[in-house]
Image (cartoon, helix red, strand yellow):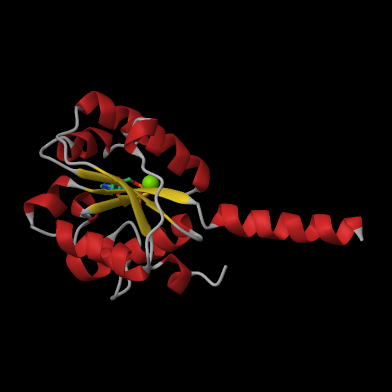
Length: 169
Ligand code: DAT
Ligand code: MG
């Protein structure tokens, strides 16, 4: 009996916490310059994910070098940092069930020539060095990136009126 109650409690807790998964999505300078901010945000909104943080800023090279630290040894790294710091960007945090993995699917493959039609990159861009949007590739990376781009106060916990129509529990 106790075991059953504990198992049920665990399942409920797990379900609740996974609905709270967060990912870091950022519209890159080319996405901003090409006027695609609204369309990209709309895709995440329409899907049912919850926006919990957003800002408009011109990022420094220093911040971008930290963000892309894992790629520092790659030949395209200097060009990547130059492009990413060439104009304003829109960093965001989106929340929801499996949002990290689904967010990556919605973005499409890194190189738009391999991104399926229907994905953001598949529909809206052409070259890997101008692929308009960033998305975290794991929950761990998401947590690191959210901490890098936002203070805890900038990430807002709230309940959308639509929530009970998006999740069954
Ligand atoms: P993703 O953005 O899909 O997570 P990534 O983390 O491997 O891909 O690379 C970060 C960014 O670096 C990517 O969005 C675009 C750029 N990039 C990756 N591979 C590249 C390449 N071969 N040439 C030029 N830019 C590249
Ligand atoms: Mg990446």
